[in-house]
Amino acid sequence: MRIAIDAMGGDHAPKEIVMGAVQAVQHFQDIEIVLFGDEQQIEPHLSAKERIQIVHTDEVIEATDEPVRAVRRKKQSSMVLMAEEVKQGRADACISAGNTGALMAAGLFVVGRIEGIERPALAPTLPTVDGGGFVFLDVGANVDARPEHLLQYALMGAVYAKKARGIADPRVGLLNVGTENQKGNDLTKRAFQLLQEANVNFVGNVEARDLLQGVADVVVTDGFSGNIALKAIEGTAISMFSMLKKALTSSFSSKIAASLLKPKLMGLKKQMDYSEYGGAALFGLNAPVIKAHGSSDANAIFHAVRQAREMVINDMVGTIKEELRHIS
Image (cartoon, one colour):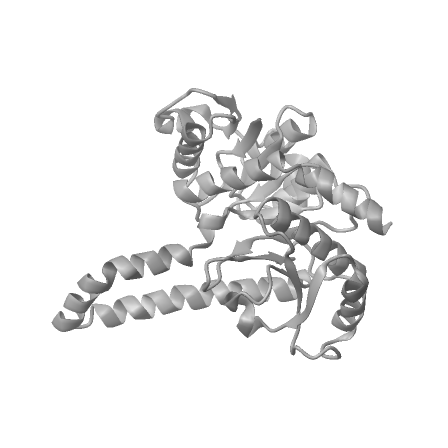
């Protein structure tokens, strides 16, 4: 299995990207990794070269680049060449921590969309208090959506939860402003009806305040609402840990308490760390495409590789195609 990685994408590239790739090949004996980027910058961080190849390129898509224009104009960029490797069948999946919009454009224009999928969805797996986590889609690939798109999101999310996360009968929820059946706008009301009739374990509407309580294994929404909810969750988590740290270092006695609580707090932080679940998968494309967080460290890249590997092993794309045939 070959996985292509954009070594130049992300806040800590290429060092953390390369270190994560090395960690992955040392852990998984059945993968090879191709790193795309500046060879001179990559080499110093490549502590092991077994089953890792470098494809040199000087061109990089920056975080400030306009996504579609960058993909069309920077044909020799690390991200575009990575996607091209998948398109040509020389790699089974690809990963980038770079420009999110550009990766979505590269996924659409280079890797290509599964026939029958109208709009791909960006889907991270977020932590829950019980440690189970849930797949959340869409979180920004498309700010507008139709009820049929939410149905496709539900099918793809359920396939992923079942195949890659080992959940036998994933519970699918629809993000809404209330749990009652008739709540919401026209989009959610029509989507609710479609999901009731679909071949998924639909548990009804779910509210944003209950997402981290594990009310569903898959939660679907439009990209506009999904992105707002995702950023609110991320911001709240950062703020809470910051407030907790400040409170536990405000006095001598609190510092003593903090030293006693440190193992428990570190365990809590790990449990709620989204990077432990991998990156955000772009569902609906002809191969697994993973968007790692822009601030990804080596551990986050390792888990993104693990995620991509699981998607290939479980033939996520083939299973999604099969599910689409059942509803067409």
